[in-house]
Length: 403
Image (cartoon, rainbow, N blue to C red; front, side, top):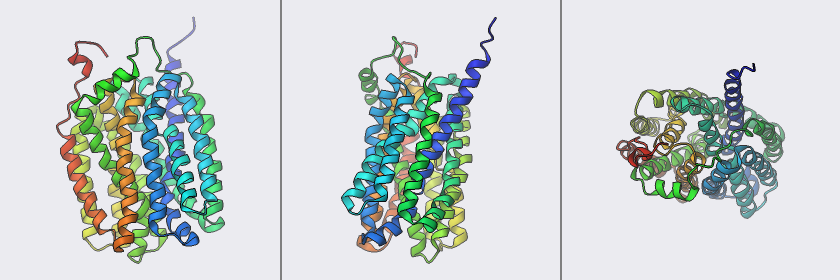
């Protein structure tokens, strides 16, 4: 008789490995975009707002497309979404390499890369992972995939900086486009993970249910703050440190430390989600961010204080992802997980747009990032207040149904 037990276990391991690899490549490339701000701006005669606006548009488009990409992944499978996203991502990087006007940069780094990210990152990958594991292991599995994927943010930053120094920023982007294409073969691991069952609630009904839920809005607004922090820091921290008299290599090292510490932080986020109330852990993380940012900008900025900030903020970086997505799954189930996770992520990306764009806008106006750092602290405190009252009671229990 055929032994069936090992099959699901091996498929889950394969899925986790493939998902982590896709996240590592997609987020690793994206995490290094801040390294291109100064060389591209200098060579093209732009102020910092031009590059910041393109990256802000990228994040907004990424977020706006995510619910639709997630809905398609829920219905037709994550594999197709990942392949399409890979092609758009690579095309955007190549077009970015040859961009000579602000409009061309927004089209390439903003539109194409943003659409590519929507098919190769959290909502699609973690939505598939959430459906492939038992509910009791769901938060842990998403945390593990996020943690392993986060390693790409650490490993790829020194490589990106070396490519810029060796080949120049334009050729470096072409090389990164070739690297992005390696995500496509890993989509094969997702072909059997389908969400389309006959009893699945209609996507519109599930969306209406979520939008009528107070906790869904609180969670989404809290994730808005996460996006503001992540994109402001990754886009502007290297330039901020250069302004303080530190070399660009210091900023690269800090971003790499964020990625490395994030491996532990994302894993711990998944573990915490299994043991404690997830919204309470989110509130604690945002309070920790407020304290870390305040200490960094209010104390003298040195090379070692920058490294310490990278480690601390890295521990609090993507630990929000398994906790936020795990809360969505706990309350609304996993049948429309990619779509609903995409809606929450859209709010994250609205915050990302403002964090990236305001950083450049206010710097060009005042010559300082002080106002944006202050906003980041205040928003972290607000996010803690928004997440604390959220309850994880499944909506189907309220309706007397079974998820």
